[in-house]
Length: 72
Image 1: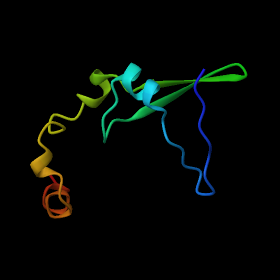
Image 2: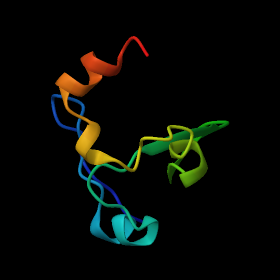
Image 3: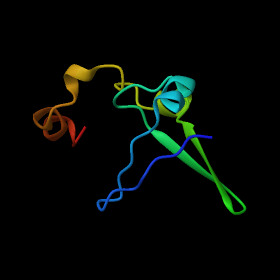
Image 4: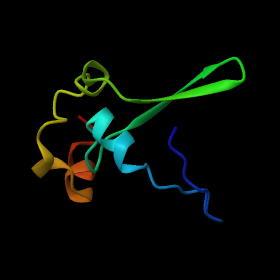
């Protein structure tokens, strides 16, 4: 069993073994699934992220781009 502490800002570090098991990398999204009195931590699956056709184009993620394309 892995554990981590919650900081005063409600942050925690995902233990290395969990990061490796879920194949996490910076920028990944975690999903919390409630099951009765328990919560399951999972990596967000790729199909949900793929809904945005421009998700793979990181060069288009600036604030200027967001403003420029906001009304399209």
